[in-house]
Image (tube, rainbow, N blue to C red; front, side):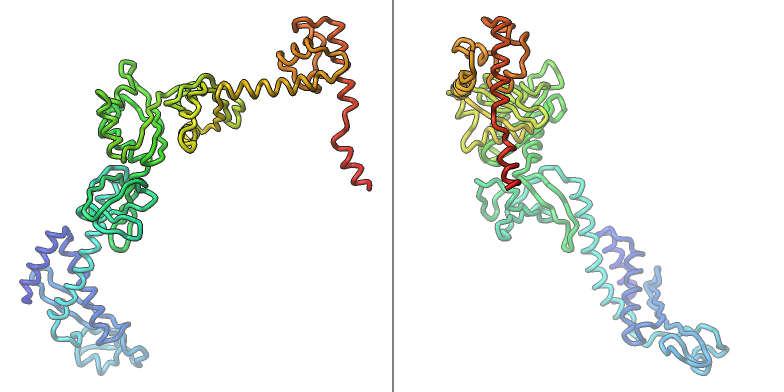
Length: 431
């Protein structure tokens, strides 16, 4: 290749690949030096230059003039130096032509290797820079091949991977099938950017809703939280930022057109749209949709435990198939939900009341009416009764001061006679 042709070719490649000519030339010079070291020595001081205008090559070996040579690759005697420079003296640096006449051939071969490598590096970097800002966006592609149970998707300029854990379980694909997924993350890899896709993530459903529902795209309606059992069921809390806009209605669309379009994209996944609520009771009741909740009782606010009562016919719907509905509701709210039917709760209460009545009936001086009154007041055990004051009991219907005093004394006496749970252990230790 002629020198002028080389420069013309380099300039054309530089334009096509968006790589500066100076950078290409610098890399070729470095590669030529590396190639010449095979002839001169790995530690030799070799300087290669390509003329930026004409493309002319030159390469020289530089050595220091010394009296006694200890490093032949870097030094030479005065007599040897004077072959290249007549007035060379001790301490001077002498440069002479590198022992390779066909610089153009070496440079051309090197240029090809360098350019191939560099172009790949630049293309990898450009693809990474192009796809990295797209994290969280939905892209479309076609199934290119399968890697174990992962799906490799052709995205045009690069490939993406749809791992098994990010697939919707009930979906099946064939080579060439169209796939729409969200870019979960983009990592740098040796062969180019590793684009990880997802169809099972909450983010994918959120992006679909933003695409299909203008009110969500323009922030009029806000998606507060999403939880999914991909391909089967999802729960989405939505809240309107405009009092004139109904969040649920906007998401459903005319005759369900908007939500149906989204459900079709996620393999018929059922989507429960839940209105946002500021108080815990309403939030928990809403989370169990489509079941209708009769009442919510906070059992332990600190540990976020609540008891949910529903009508008998709503119990199966509230729990869902294999507990799916209540499980998603718990994940959505962060609360542990104890779902019971009203009949179950009544049976539990009756059983507890009978047990309490039996315990209190064993106390001296307590008749059936008095026991019934105490149980209805929530006094169901001896220890609690013993801790009551006379005023506490006289406030109840049918209990006077004398009766109250006798009841309390009887409870305290029974409590005093009760065996100490720690006693057997103490006796065992002594034995």
